[in-house]
Length: 136
Image 1 (cartoon, rainbow, N blue to C red):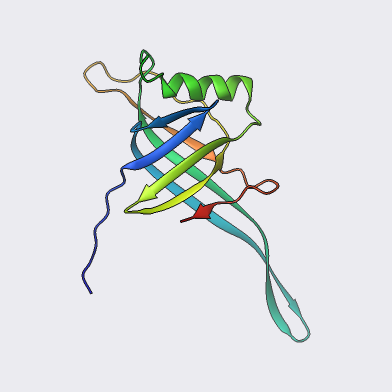
Image 2: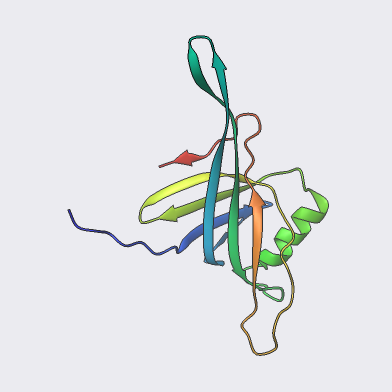
């Protein structure tokens, strides 16, 4: 069996019905199972409680972008005005995608004078109600 090496290039964010593609320099999805382990007379057991997770996105700071619109401004605005309204995302790796919802967060602004400015923003996964991560 041959090894297949992947690159992390595919992330789509949807903010206020606007879809942003090719906006990330990197993206990492991390999900953690929250479990309870108990012990009764007959032995130990483990019970799934829920999940928590984050989508960490490394973005180029595009504050002045107009076409497409600035994803940094859109994230900032969503975090400032609707922090409890989750945003749709799709993350792909070599033909396999995961879709779900994340809560907005404020991207950092600024950096070194000689750098292409980037920012890292961590978005909490929305697992409330019927929201799940869908693997295709």
